[in-house]
Length: 422
Image 1: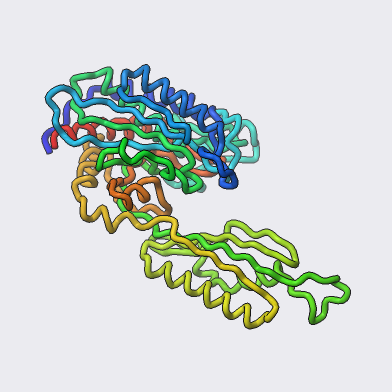
Image 2 (image 1 turned 135 degrees about the horizontal axis):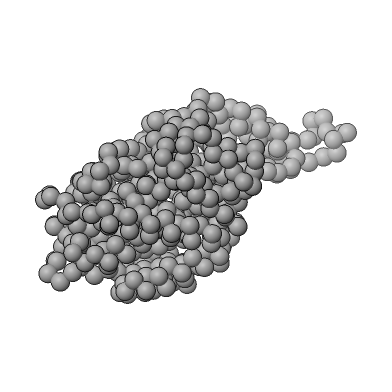
């Protein structure tokens, strides 16, 4: 694949400083998505960051910059004259998870971290230590960036955005660095599974990458097969004092139903390549109770087995309680991108080489989740996932090391060169 073009210490310093400054700026913009909203994007506040990104793309001199009403920024860095290689796409999402507060984020830089517990100014009871995340020990002496304790940081995925933008700024600042045409797409609502819902596929090249992974070196070309199940238990309400043989208590029956799901097959007991059930919502009363759960596995057949088990439980409970009615709706959310990416090895091989060129050990892992890339892969745009360096996503202890921002940015620069050589 050719020897890596020399990346100087000056370039690396620029990458890290630029990516870090962008991250500290972007995380302060409130962009939490909302699953219960029917608008596109689900929250108008996401447009605040999207507008800023569109303006910054214009300032960087990119072509074809546009912002759609439904929450997508597109921009293109043309290839230098004489480069006739395939274009690549780089994607990252602006929204942050609704699982933790995302408003009034105050980023804190713990400079030259000495390995002692990291405290949070806005929550003195909260601490970050290697017991929370053993990988933290790898970054003694680095700058650790966290939020202040009341919110998540938002490195998922504002770190990815920062690294993409810093890579583009580097290629513009140092024109001697070769690159293919790069098309950017910043999306909304990825955290609620709608990141590609309104995307203009015509703006994307065939091969793309999401910059949305975790520990430095992670390269992911496999993800969960994912299903969602929604259960509604319809009971019969009556005065509790006269309930014998009359009351059909929907919420109590829902609890008994959930107790039939094997404990060893639940998310809290799953790791590696194991799949799981995960109940994330229960609400209701005696007459009507609703349960929401997701089903995950790397193998579609295993998820089909779990779905069939829910159908079996439905039949069994309706027979056990003749006046009970259970509505069960299931739908597939996304598929394991492995099955398609195996037919496009080059897109993964070039990312592997780029990570190595950045001096980082490549960690080939399967995503215990999904990304916009898994959905794009299904519709004809093979899209593996590359690390950002962020850790403990979706929590108030979320963190990222400053050096990881540089490593991810440098990886993107090398990736652009490898594609230019195709």
